[in-house]
Image 1 (cartoon, one colour):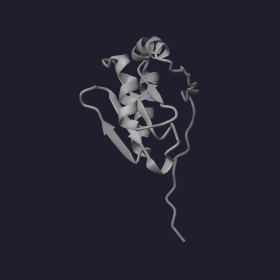
Image 2: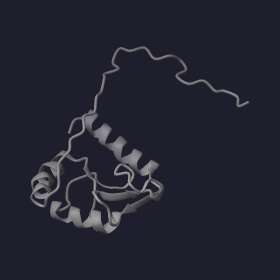
Image 3: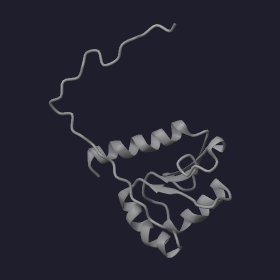
Image 4: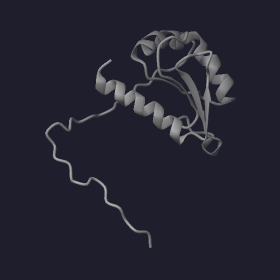
Length: 125
């Protein structure tokens, strides 16, 4: 995995944890956690299973999603690890799941001049 891809996937996992009302760690499944937010009960983004790394049997993912996300019309499992995604795609497709890709755009900032300081303190009214 490239350094940039590693940074992006780490950011996405950390962001999901920060915005979640509840994070459920699954120690028996390393690299897998669930995020839930009852306030956004119908949101797949706020209620999903996330796979950060390799090592989990892809066949277990639908059951984990149902167990930890509760009854839903659709479940979302985000696989951030490329190797795990490659292994999970055919298994989940055989179980009737649909694969969706995400496009993440990046731009190199090499050679760019950033303002100093990048942020300024402000007073509240």
